[in-house]
Image 1 (cartoon, helix red, strand yellow):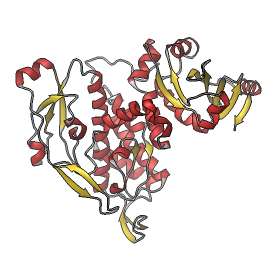
Image 2: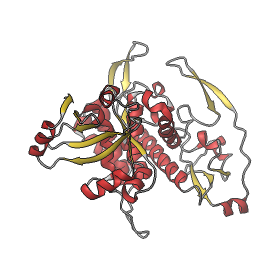
Image 3: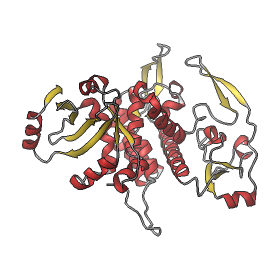
Image 4: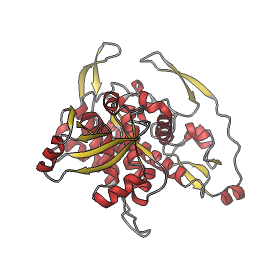
Length: 397
């Protein structure tokens, strides 16, 4: 049920951290003219590159970054692959573009060796940091403290150097802002520390970090940014994603923007929590999808959130053991785009538009206050799909 089998401790090629790979892979797309047009909260859920205004170009860039992360490619190979990608052949050099904020026609820098280095470093470091944060929260009982460490840079920023060796609890609010990387080109990192080591070396006092007011020259908006952190880097991306998941589960999910909602649902569907429910039958539930409100009304349900439980896991393991945990990321899009059938007034059947579609069945509880995924699989034949459609009423093509 998982795409990440256990690897031996002596492996010389352990592959990418699965959490980091998932963080990047589950991001939505956010075209933007400038990095200043995108808030830190958006960076946590959406992939964006300044001046990449075409979704096809943005998707191609993300594909090259994802490949570099998953295969551990060095910068030189990333640059070579980028230039060889046909979809990116025109996204290079300088081009006249209209700034959507000012309306001015400017000569914009698209791809260049320097920009590729920035794209490579910024995205891989933030993805690895977000993946590390997920592991930190998962193992905090054994390693309840973090130590701030400097990276291999020749020259360190004063505010970063002042924090070298500092040890604070994982739950300290300090890490909400100071989880590295903390700026363009920042190579700082954190190391997990046991309670015994923290007691032996001494737990630090939370530093009094002064803030400064930064004015976004493009929008005129002002933001509070800690001294020593570059604007746009002042939030912990891994914690933002986790908070997005938890906050949405507390009721924010239904009213969240579509791109934020989809990214959070993909995170939940492929998270370690969901993996444990699906592979080990762990107790509890996990929210993995959201049915559009106009469709949930067909079930007379008071919620549109779809969860999985141990019952889902039991049925899946018996009937469809071939479905992998990562496949559950497809559910968010399937709810929005697939053909939908109504069966027996308590079941909605979703079918993707593939020749052999992915199929998800959603069932309402008797009270109508919960929706559960009862099965998820890929059809084995066109004949089976035709018979399935004939047994239900189509409510969305």
